[in-house]
Amino acid sequence: MSRVYLLVEGQTEEAFVTELLAPHYERQGLYLIPILVRTSPGHKGGVVSYAKIKPQIEKLCKQDAGAHVSTLFDLYALPGDFPGKAEPAYPRNGNGHMKAGFLEAALGKDIGATNFIPNLLVHEFEALLLTQVDAFAAWTDNDRMLEPLRSARSAAPPEEINDGPQSAPSKRVLAAMPGYQKTIHGPLIACDIGLDAIRAACPHFDAWLKRLESVAL
View 1 (cartoon, rainbow, N blue to C red):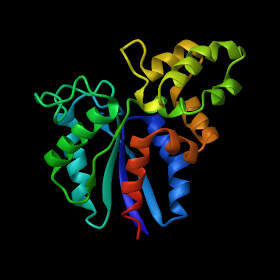
View 2: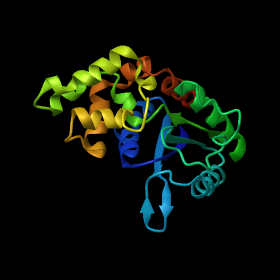
View 3: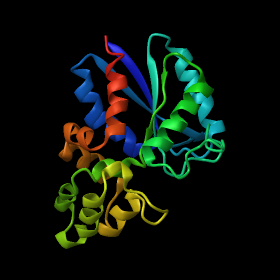
View 4: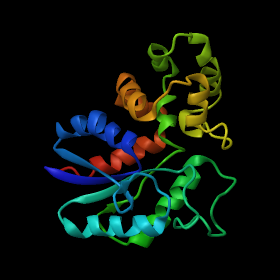
């Protein structure tokens, strides 16, 4: 069985891996192990500084030479010291896939480990949930509140729904569903949608999973 340590940004991503990804890939001989990033002694979650994240990635890459290491971080609101973000070539006016690809390449180069698979979510975890807006219906008493999400989804693929700090996927979800609790509802809705549907609607996410599948023995 192949092992992949996934350094995740928060408890939502940790639950997403535990409840949806890990059971699916365990049947294929791929063991996914989520690990929350540490931000300070006694505190976990959030990519607030790359300087604090880099040693954790390097340690994981070195501690188990027979395993692979990957990341599950949001492209949205990455810190300014993240590799590639301050480079002149960073495609600031490009789409999410272009930005994520550029930063993933810079991250991979900075870590420099052969067993490292850099990955960013475009633009954040909630984008995956916009694959099927109707999956939110079970958690709201007013289905009409979901119309803005349906409009956004009809206008763009999930990974391209992001045009400002107040209209990022998570902000749109909260506006439509004020009772949305990321760590509770997020993984449950993702499981209701299903991995196949998410992969079909989110090509960048799908490409990452294909890279993980390629290391399975």
